[in-house]
Amino acid sequence: MSTATRHRWSAHELLDLVLDDGSYESWDEPIDISGHPPAYQDALRAAALRAGTDESVITGRARMRGRPVAVVVNEFGFLAGSIGRAAAHRITAAVRRATAEGLPLLATTASGGTRMQEGTPAFVEMASISRAIMEHRAAGLPYLVYLRHPTTGGVYASWGSLAHVTVAEPGALVGFLGPKVYEALRGEPFPPDVQTAENLADKGVIDAVVRPEDLPALVDLALGVLVDPARAPELPRRTAAPAPGGSAWESIRRTREPGRTGVRDLIRYGAAGTVRLRGTDEGERDHAVLVALTRLDGQPCVVVGQDRERQGDSTPLGPGALREARRAMRLADELRLPLVTVIDTPGAELSVTAEERAIAGEIARCIATLTTMSVPTVSVILGQGCGGGALALLPAATVVATEHAWLSPLPPEGASVIVHGDTEHAAEMATAQRVRATELAGLGVVDEIVAEPDDDTPADLARAVAAAVARVLATAGD
Image 1 (cartoon, rainbow, N blue to C red):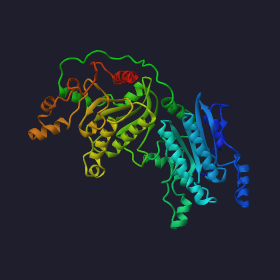
Image 2: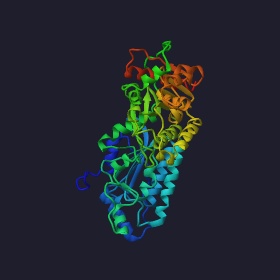
Image 3: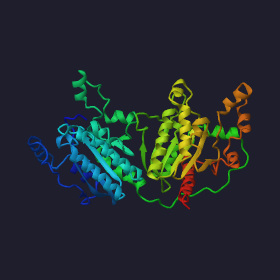
Image 4: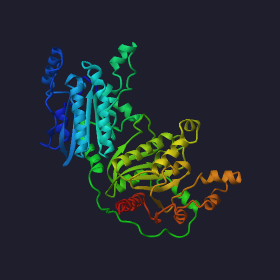
């Protein structure tokens, strides 16, 4: 969408779009401009007439689908949405009031950054805003941000980049340095299509690109997980014991079959109200994992799962995937939400690149983070559980496994090569290493096994796993 044809949503239009009718109550105090030079006072008065707001931000309390929320909304029509000291103080006051009142904070940006007419005194206020937001997050309260066109400079480098969930307007210019400033300083244009919402989503800097018209539904879904209470589990739970007999190699073969239940099936059939999160939010994205805010059989949680559909020889589970997993762990801990990890991997990436990007360190950090979390944690061994990539998501407080799931330090073929010098003894090694879920239960590694009858379907198994996890979460505080 070109900037020439773009409809620029005003602050009040966005409030009307997202919030419940008639629910908005302003928190804003009158702005005193008397201390500024006369010419700047004239500019501020003119800006207020054009924009219909008394400053570049408006703040207040409202309801979103019945839930109380606090809002901070940039108005680009007021001096390009720039943030002077008065605007910064207004944002900081609103954030602190939201924290004191225990409210989720919804913010939307559209700004050229710090207001140049006020210079350094305004510039350093970005740190004060950031401090208030981090105190809000430390209180376990959600912070959601919608980046509009354009969002640049100090706004993007402070309160625009500190949210738990960050989405942006289609085609929005989002960047640290405005392209016009870059060209003036460097004498060459900034490369096109870099500072766009779509590129940042693809690179894992933001979570998604969302049309303004779709924003109410997204906010509703996110708050449904982050704010609404848990519901009693409803899915039927499988209580039957696993069928006797079978072999480790048969279980391994089943987990490698096309069409085997994966984390996407778990979300599709066992969850509701899902909001996908993408990337590390630090410029890295790996499709081998799926991260989501969701409700598994009524229980709000953060899910991070290894996606069997996206792993292969050319797309292995790399360090970036584990950094995404750690982002999910941090979010769950900070938001006071249970964490559910889903293990389903043929193994972590083995390459020069993986070594140089700290694959071993990321496995260790995932284990360390997972074992020190303060919220309920559940690990699900859904299928293949191979090597350090599996171990990274394993040590939760409760471990659930499907009947044919397995866990081993190497693929059985690799273990066979080490012990026998060939791959011909893979089945024998699988048996000797006691990799099956049933044996792991006997060792105390697995707490609950979900049976897999011969007539099982991916949808049925997904629902059964969701039911098992939900009942663990529902009783976690007992």
